[in-house]
Length: 178
Image (tube, rainbow, N blue to C red):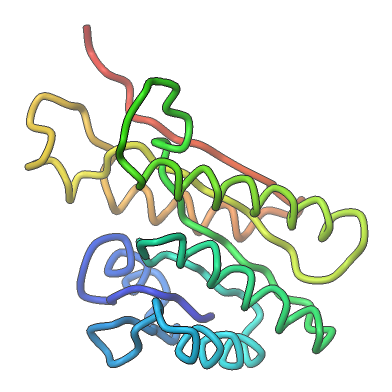
């Protein structure tokens, strides 16, 4: 398994607990996945793995571009692999905003859905998109909000990977009390 993200922080740290033998790639480990060359190196590394989790919260649409690079590299090599992209439920925001983050996550969600359909109907790499509402590691940013326990979020990622059917997309939000 190949995972983008720092195995000492956030969701990647919880995934590390579940998958201690996974290979992790992050800026803190010397790979800046906002750079084309590093994205291509990650994609080449993906050829050695059956499951790839794109977890890094990259800016300027780089998470979507990383998915594109990984997918096309795997497809060109006829590698049957499973790509799981971690998004955010902010991709569903329907109010006016000048915050680019939700547009980036909408782009990731849309592209994941397109590639997911290709994987189901035409073969090639499979792609799933998992979006979470606010996770517990960001509770300090939203003190009045119910947050999803980050260890539970990692368990949902594991659950999606282990299913005998293909899950195109799943979106999880903690219930907010009135």
